[in-house]
Image (cartoon, rainbow, N blue to C red):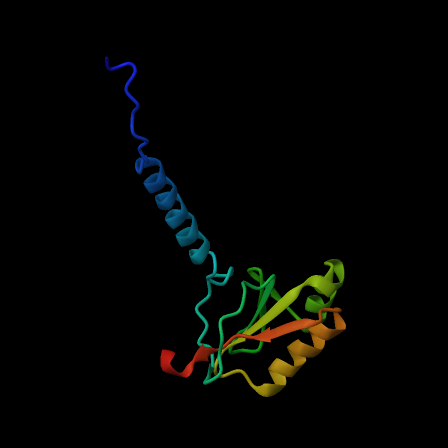
Length: 132
C-alpha cells in the first residue's frame, strides 16, 4: 500500500538558487552605484593609507581649473555653502574629490565652504598607491 508509506523529506534546491541569483544581481547593481554620481573621470591623488569609504551623500569635485562640480552643477564655494544650508548638513557626509593637480589652497577653500555650511563629516577621495 503506497498511501501508508512515509515519504522522505526533500530539500528543494531550485528556490535557493533563484534567491542566490537575485542576491548576486542586487549586490552587483549596488556596487555599480558606488561610482561617483557625476560620472566625471577624476585623476585622484594617491595615498598609502587610502581605505574604502561608504558612498558619499554629497560628492564635491574640484576640477583642474578650480571650479567645483556638485551633482552635475558647477558651483562657487559660496553656492556650495548655501546648498549645505538648505540641506540638513549636520547629517550630510561630504567627500571632496580633487584632481591630482588641485592645489592645497583650492582644497582648503572647499573645506572652509563645507564647514561654513554646517557639515561635520568631510572626507578626501584618493586612490591607493598600487592603483596607479
